[in-house]
Length: 377
Image 1 (cartoon, rainbow, N blue to C red):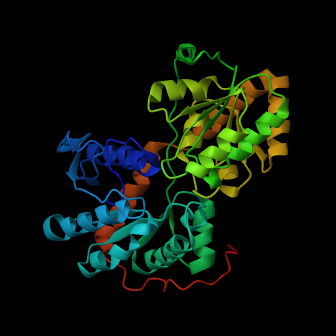
Image 2: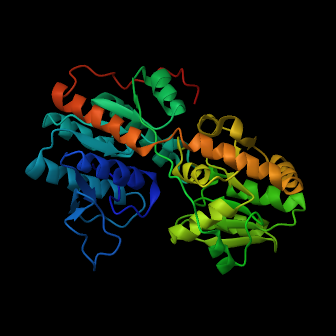
Image 3: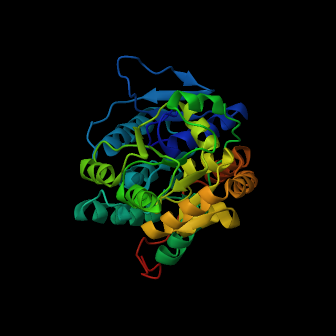
């Protein structure tokens, strides 16, 4: 498994997927190798973790180059030393390295993630790169992995390319809400946002709508972004005294208590496919009001309420505070939706795909990678 920060999972959906899937595959007797970056270079990673073998390699500490530099070293190591039966490459941005794997006849599946080129943090050059990387992934992968039906539909319509639909699992969370007292909060006594501060996550829209609403319960905002000073400043300027900006929160038990104890969790992610934060929220039984895109509707269905503008958010905030019991009932519906996202089943999907890749080897004829323009993006 290659192309991410690796394990132990500290950050992001890819890392969580590798940890949850990799440990299950190892338990089933497979040899699982994970290429890792170490956030604490002075403390080396262990050689193994939850049955997985870890290979720690360096990277260039730069937003644009960190992933690519680490993947380049990982591919070089793989070609020289390991030559696996099958490789899972996470993130279509890593697709420039796929031809090297293909030349070595290593069958590879690429997890394409979401529509990265639509993220506001990338300038014109970055957007062009990600669109080109999508096409390379289509052309040089033996299989493509999509984590949401909307992403699968995009690759079908835009490239005439099939995908394997493998979502994430939703944890079943029974959190200790007594820990909310550490933040001077009470169960069902606050609204919640958990997101990186990026334009397409719409934290500013949520904060603006909340402030307009005249809400009496505080809005707790968990998140930050190392490369988004202007956007962070905008969020701070929109907030009033009822908005509590906590920054990043790395205490998972306390974060789970927030999910479980929130009156409503507001989810603004719009371009990334199935989102692990959303799955964690429904696994904790949170009532969810989400930005209205297909990825979020796919997860929430009728259990969710949806918004696009600050005025939409304001109306939902007022509605939530006027009927607390209804939000509790919606939270129970969220838990039912969470049962549809099971890590054991996800791992079985990866296992079946790995077997197929190993048995069939590299696919001789793949889609060309040329765009049809039919996806409408």
